[in-house]
Amino acid sequence: MALKATNPTTTASWKKLQSHFDTIKSKHLKDLFTADANRAKDLTVEWDDFYVDFSKNRITKETLDLLYDLANELDLKDAISKYFEGDIINATEGRAVLHTALRAPKDAKVFVDGENVIPEVHEVKKKIENFTNSIVSGDHKGFSGKAITDVVNIGIGGSDLGPAMVVDSLQYYKNHLNTHFVSNVDGDHYNEVIKNLNPETTLFVIVSKTFTTQETLSNANSIRAWFLESQPQEAVSKHFVAVSTNIESVKNFGIDEDNIFPMKDWVGGRFSLWSAVGLSISLALGYNHFESLLEGAHKMDEHFRTSSFENNIPVTSALLTIWYNNFFKSESEAIIPYTQYLNQFATYLQQGIMESNGKSVDRAGKRVNYETGTIIWGEPGTNSQHAFFQLIHQGTKLIPTDFIGYIKSLHGNKEHHNKLMSNYFAQTEALMNGKTETEVLSEFNGQNLSEDDIKTLTPFKIFEGNKPTTSLLIQKLTPESLGKLIAMYEHKIFVQGVIWNIYSYDQFGVELGKQLAKSILKELSEDASSSNHDASTQSLLTFFKKNC
Ligand code: F6P
Image (cartoon, rainbow, N blue to C red; front, side, top):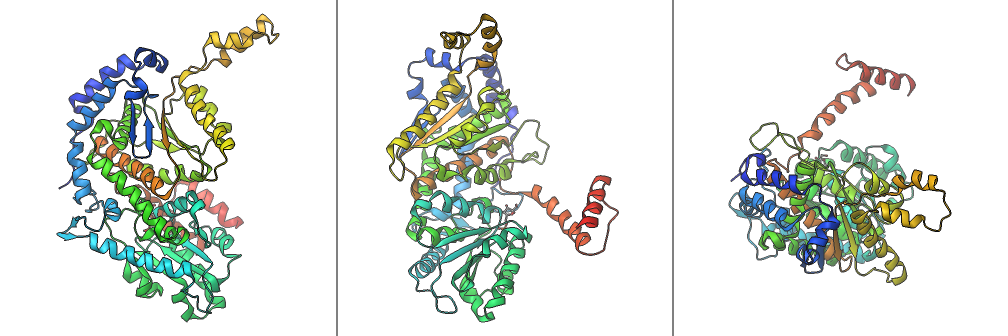
C-alpha cells in the first residue's frame, strides 16, 4: 500500500508548532541552558558507539514533543513499516524501496510481489565475495596472465558517488589495489585516469542501474576502445565486468553473463552502494570490510525501526530539519565532519538528500504550499573554518549544522587529534554563545585603543550566537560505524519525505536536461540547427560552434 497523503500544514500538531514557534523563536540558546540544568543530558541520545547531542538546537522538550506528535499524526510508524516491508512507497515509479533488504541477515524475510528477496540478495553477495577474493588474492589473472593491480569504476550519480565516497572515507582499511573513478562525460576525466594505467593489469567495473546513462556508456565505450588498441577482443571478458538491472543491454555491450553483477529495480541509485554497486568498495577494501559496512547499516536500520521516536536518532534529526526549514525558514544545512577522511561525505549526501527531497508536488499530485528539501553543503573541519564558517557565525542566514567527530583517530596522533577535536567543540560553543558587547569591550582592555576606535570596532566584533548545531560523536571511523552513519542519513531522508508528503524516491527533475542535451548534441555534432531555442541559448550555440 502506498503512503498516505496528508498536507502536514493542515494537522493540529503543525498549528500547535506554529504557535509554539512564535513563543520560542527569539529565545537564546544560552538562556535555554540556564533555564534547564538537565538540558544537555535530556536532549542527548546515546546508542551503540554514537553519542548524539541535540541540545544546542533552538528547541525545548516541548518542541520535540510537538514534533513527535506531528510524526504520529502523519502516521510515521505505519510509513516505517511499509518502507521496511517492501510496500510500493515509490508510487510514481511503482516500486518498493528496499535498500534496507540489502543489509538484512540471511534469515530475514522481505517480500516483493510475493517473493522473499533475501536469498537472492545473499546470492549476489556471495558472488561479490568470491570475485573480490579472486581479484585481491591475484588468482584472477588478466588476459596476459598478470594479476590485477588497478580497478576503475565507471558510473555516475549513485553509481559513482557512494562507492567513491566510501572508498575514500575508508582508505585507511584499503588493500593493495589502486582504485579509480570515472564519472564525468568530460573526455578529459577518463583520459586523465587511464593515461597511467596498464590495460593488462586493470579491471573495469561498469556500473549503471539502467545501462542507458549517456555519461557511463560513453566512458565505457571510449575506455573499451582504448583497451582494444593494445589488447585482443578475447581479453575483454577478463577485464570488464558490469553491475546493472539491464542484463540484456550489458550483454549487448559485450560483457559475459558470468561477469554481470545484477541489481534490482527496488534499489534506488542514490541508495545503492549496499548492492552490487558496492563491488568497487569490496574490491578496494576487501569483502570483510564491505560486509562490516552492511552490518553497521543494518544496526542503524534496527535502531530506526524499533526505537521510540524520543530515542530515535534519524527521526529526531529529520524532525529538526522540518523545524528549521518550515518554521525558521532556514534554506540550507551544513554537514561538517571533523575528519579529513570524510572529505566527500557532504557531496555524497547532496545527491541522497537533494535528489530525494527536491520536490514541489505532494503525494496527492498538488503543488505544495510549504517548503520542502533543504540545500546541503559542507566540507571537513578544520579546513572549512578557514573558508566559509564566517558566514555561519556572522552572516544573516540561519544554517543548522551537523558536526561529526570521532573520539579516536585512526593513526593515533593524540596531539593532532586533540587539536582537531578542540576545534570541533569550540566551534559549536562559539556558534551557540556568540560574543556579547560586554565581552568585546573587555577584550579591548589593555589594547591601547582610543575611545573612538573602540566605538567604531565594537559592532563588528559582536557575534549574536544562537546558531544551532547537532554534535555527533562516534567512537572511531570504521566500516561498521560508517555504515551506521550513512544509514542514519538515509532514514532521515525518508522521514522528511513522509512529513513533507512528497515522493522521495523518483527523480524526474533530472530528465528534462538530459532530453534537451540529446537534441543539442545532434546540433553540435552535425551541421543541423534548430529554431526551437530561446535567443540566449541560440546565441551561445552559434558562438560555440563558430569558435570550436
Ligand atoms: O541523475 C539521475 C540518475 O538517475 C541518478 O538517480 C542515478 O544515480 C544516476 O542517474 C545514474 O544512473 P544509472 O545508474 O542508471 O547509470
